[in-house]
Image (cartoon, rainbow, N blue to C red; front, top):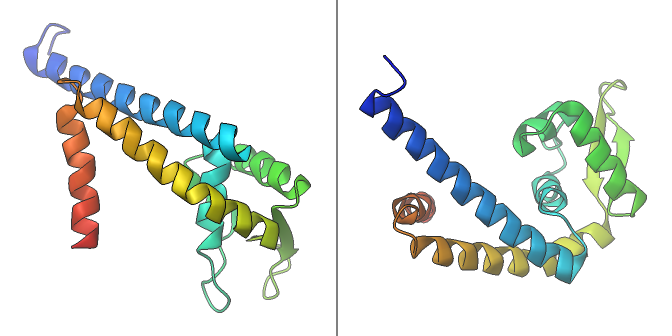
Length: 154
């Protein structure tokens, strides 16, 4: 294949459109969360992921699992956790079964902030998708995102 191969160009074009959609959504959601709740989109995502943990076997995520869920490096995840811990939104504790493992829990203040921010996140996401749907180059991607949600609700 050469760089002018129509298949390669279409694939690269599709990837570029997906990147644009993701960036536009992230910027829109980030602005709304920061303005209303003082949370970045990553901070919101971390609180959201950790809020879904539960007590009992397999209920708590290890830091590498949190990093995977957020698509962050382990060091970036640690910095993010530390930032929210410093704000009193999270706490860390040693795993009772393996004292080398460290778990992270959302504090009561973190849960309250997450619940307050959830509607902002959802509304900003909806706004960003609606705006993107008006762009012919992004409309099919918006439809695909909405189809994933519809299938999940199924």
